[in-house]
Image 1 (cartoon, helix red, strand yellow):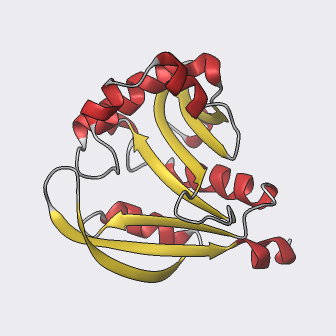
Image 2 (spheres, rainbow, N blue to C red):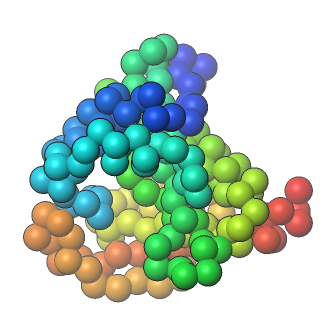
Length: 176
């Protein structure tokens, strides 16, 4: 399998059932790596899933092997920033058979391109559990800088540090 076999594209409201299945699978396989729980996600209505894919201040991408959805990733306006100037990366998941082959780089490229084009944002943020080395490597490879760390209670009951990173979109836009 080579990189050209797969493609990434934004998901829209019509993709909600495939997106829901991928998100539930991610939460069930890795309950401690996400800021959400399987139980909460299972309770969402079809309208809530569709709203997540409407593209308003956010973008969820799907990684496809031909027509089969094999991964998801997202970038949202950060709800912790009342100015609305921060985008945050979230919910990255790749099916196990596709991991370790460089597809996460497609995720970073797509989300950074969206962030550069989404003019309200001045920075992108991303974080990971301290034990998630693949995420750390991908984050650093794409130019993010470590901004802090803090102890966090994860949904699987683990208490572990969360490492936080930032990418300056203003500087990135000026460099283009």
